[in-house]
Image 1 (tube, rainbow, N blue to C red):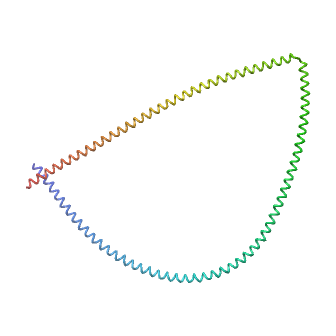
Image 2: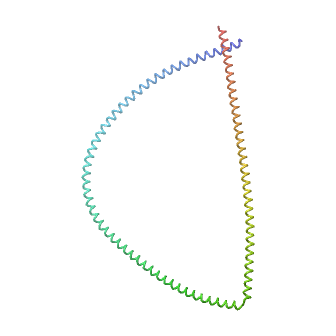
Image 3: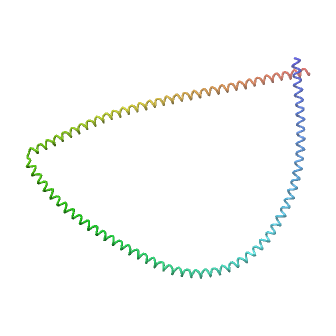
Length: 299
């Protein structure tokens, strides 16, 4: 109990000394602020007086400059009026000279335009004559080429007529020879042609069967490939859905773990705050008891 009273007394003495020091420091600060305010007021008054004197001096200078500038402007205006009158007289003279030159130039341009128009007409006439000569030359060439084409067509028609007559003669000669060979040769040739036709038909039918078989095999392979592709697509979709479900479950699990972690963090922080509050309240109670004991001992 004696130790507690001594501790309480020492704490009370330290608190009282700290309070006295704080009051002394506050008093010193108030005195310093008052002195600083008075110093600032005096400096502000001096600066205001200096600024007013400087402003008056600047206003006088500005008025003197304005008066000198006004006098200069009046002199410049008089000079401008005289120069404007001289310029108007010179302008009238220049207008007269320009009118005379314009008349002479218009006459010169008129004569030159007439000469240019005549030259253009002569040039266009020469161009038209050249074009007419070229067109007449082209027409002559076309007439010569048409004549050549007509002669070539007549020659070809005569040659065609001659060939037709020769072919008719050859065909009649061949018919006579075939009739001379007899019916046996005709039947033999027909048999050979029939055999060739039957052989060609058999080859065509065989090729058609092969094509149908190949096409059927291709259709079967395409159907199998389509079925395999469909199966692969279904498996891919199923795997994608499974992966998506797994990712979703993992994300939900991570969110739950994060929420649980933050809940633990919040609870831990709350428990720390509660413990700190309890400790502070216990210390306050202890200090209050000590203060009461000190007061009781002092009484």
